[in-house]
Each structure stands twice: as structure tokens, then as C-alpha cells.
Amino acid sequence: MGPWALCFWRLALACAILLPIVYHHYGAMIALIRSRAAEVVFIGAIGLTLCQGMIYTGLHDTNATTAGIIMALSPVMTMVIARIVLGEPLGLWKAIGALFALAGMMIIVAHGDLIALMRLQFSAGELWIAGSALCWGVYTVLLRRARFGIDLLPMVVLLLGAGSLVALPFYAWELYSGDRSTLHANGLIALAYMAGPGGALMYYLYNRSVEILGAGRASMLLYLQTLFVALLAYLLLGESLKSYDVFGAAFIVAGVILATVIKQKSPAANSQ
Image (cartoon, rainbow, N blue to C red; front, side):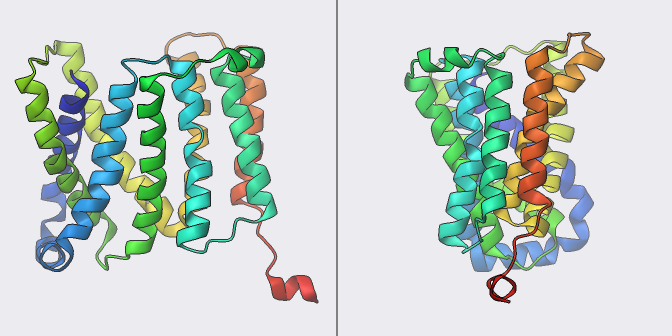
């Protein structure tokens, strides 16, 4: 599938999966659309349409190592944006945790050869990936700031629907350019996973974590994706775990613990 075809169908199918579940909330959803439609569409476009479309486009022109390193900057970007826009405290432990997790991510994606990081060359593909990472950070912060006032699941449905509508013109342009999808059975199964567990469920859980933890702390948990990938590849695909996988995972876990578990002391407590 082309990048924008994949973006559109993932969002549209995820929305279709969840839409019947939230029928009790249709009244509140319609009222929100009437009062804040532009805001819903804007946030959905930033975090769901542009973020996905840009990373799918960038992966056509870059390698996984470079893409992984750039996307690893997304939580750090989110923390900085959250500090500026929301006034969320950065704090010493959160900053140290972010550095630990970023180091762990780099160790894993570079296969332990950190000298190779100095030889990376950036192209148009890397710019697309960097734009995607920035969009995800902005989306996380805007989601925390918006406070739409309805239950989370119907809000996710609205964002998915808005994201798919914004992706539709890009998809149409892709079709007009002759980039057609040619999915076989395995491809359809993969798309179903991306729309269901990897789409509808994932967006609900992530938005819930932002609601509970705040933008900065929730974004830090994204570093665990690298750890999960390595573990699942070992359990399901029989891929061996290398020493750099274990070493990098230890840095990631330590960083997430420092950033999300240790509480910052308030100024009042420090003055006593």
C-alpha cells in the first residue's frame, strides 16, 4: 500500500470498529462537533493523519536505524513542548530519565555500534520522519490541553474520523498518481491488525495515559516499544537477543522509571 492509502484505511477502519460501541454517546459527540469541530479536526490531522502519513512516506527513503533514532526524539520533544505550552514541570529526574531512555534506544537501533551513529547521512526521508516525531509531540500536548469534556472512547472515535477525512484527499491524490494498493491475504491480515489492536485499541490506551499521566510522562512510555519489539521477536519469531538489546533495554527501563515513577519535590517542600 502507498503511505497515504495505509494512513487512510488504518484510521477509517479503526473508527468503524469503535463507532458502534459508542452509540450511547452520539448526542454528546454531535454536540461537540457543532461547537468545536475545527479543533477536533486540527488535532486529529496533526496526530493521526500527518504523523502517520509522514512516517510512512519517510520510510520509503531511509533506513530503520536512522528512523528509529529520530523517532526516539519524540518524547523529548513532547516534554519540551509540554513545558512551554502546558507548564508541566520538566524536573531533574524526568530530564535524566529521558536521556537514559534515549541512550537505550540508540544502543538498540544502532546494534551497539555507537560509532556508526556519527556516519549517518540525512536525506528527505529523515526530514519526513523528523516532521512525524514533531507532529506526535504536538498532538500529545494539544490532546492534554483541549479537555473536550466527553468520555475518552467517543473522543478517540471523533479523532479517528477526523484523521481519516483529512487523509482522504492525500489518498485520492495517491490514486490519481497511479500508486495502487495490491494486498494479498497476509497484507489484509496485517491491515486488520493495524486497524484493530494496533489502531483503535492503541489510540484509546495512549490517550488514556495522556489523560492520567500528563503529556510528558505519557510520551516517555513510548520508549518501551523498542523493548517490546525485541522481546516479541525473540518469543514469536525465534530471533536471538543480542547483548546490545539487553543493555539498551536496561537503559530504557531505568529511564522510564526515573521519569515516571520518581515524584518531583514541590518548591514548598524544598524550602522547608
